[in-house]
Image (cartoon, rainbow, N blue to C red; front, side):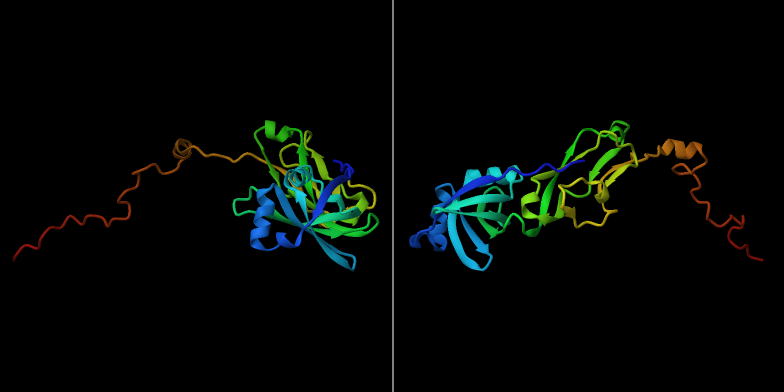
Length: 224
């Protein structure tokens, strides 16, 4: 169980022109393959800019949420705070970055990566990933790109808890220590209906009419 340190990725941004604002301007930006973006925080003026959509998607796919932003000759460390997708969830349509210092304490979510095949799965159990992202708190410069857990030795009934995670020095998860991260569940037990009958269960049709009143044997009253 380990947490590799994140490699700092550089994203180059282009300042937005006055004509690029509004729905029409934003639509043209996206059609060109770029994504509208915003940088804010630390009491400084907001910066609106665009980034290459492919480069931004590559950052997300590799867990690089903390990046070096180079915009118009200036460099800032930005933490992705909000990423908006289109209605189909396929394309990024906007992204917000917050300025941070590498020594600043931040709270962020880091992707969980599960490695290996649990022994319990080979024995018929099922792997349940209870936390796909791990909330962490610590210095921005120590933020890992993802957190790995190796499940090879887990048997049925075993689990990995938050207290088992190994994070970079000074970084901690905000989850309770006992919070389950990965669990190996026992296989579901399927009961054969025929076995139920052999064990004394009631088979289909058996006992029909058991609650009927006994026949008194009497017919219609005869006349005297």
